[in-house]
Image (cartoon, rainbow, N blue to C red; front, side):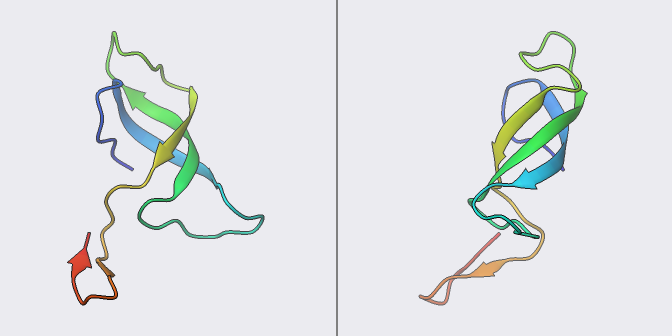
Length: 71
């Protein structure tokens, strides 16, 4: 998955979803544990580092109770 911050990581691979023993899928706002698969030189994280990340964007929109949708 793509990274949307300035740590130097470009791509992550999700390892685990935090918040429950057998969670299979993550959605908006969920915290995951991931490893860095691709990083830019000179960044604060290196390839292979294990990091925590928050899901901020998904392919499928999520419907809110007021009828609006967020991606």
